[in-house]
Image (cartoon, rainbow, N blue to C red; front, side, top):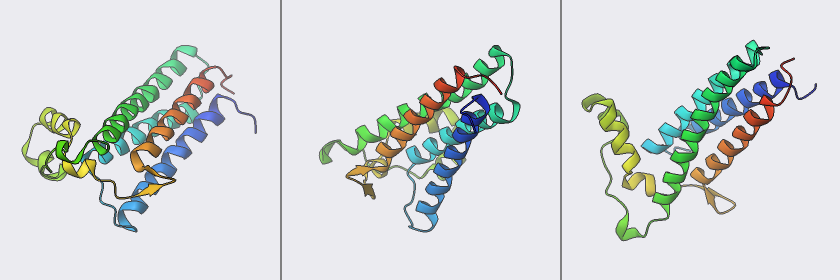
Length: 164
């Protein structure tokens, strides 16, 4: 199997799917409750996954359509990179500068307008600063940052490949 446009997009979709499945396993099996920034990062992976899936299924010949699919995917990945960087920053604040814990995302979604929810999540809260799991000394936001960067590389490489 060659690394053409369709194959690279399929690989990106499968990687996004594996990342979401991993997040769900961490939540439901290992009981690591996601903070609001974690939830937003999952959404970024889901949107990128849809972009990759569109590219894999359609594999358009038109460079304009390929650019649109890739643009949607890259936008979600860049949003994820920003979220991961914000999360890493919060986790590295001195203890006296960590924001207090706020209401849960479910509650905010019920009572606040969406713009206020986004604003409050991006400003961070104490639960987002908590490091509850590490691998090789790096927390989950670091690993998601690496995943976003790797997936962005797949998008950029796929744009240079033939559709079929």
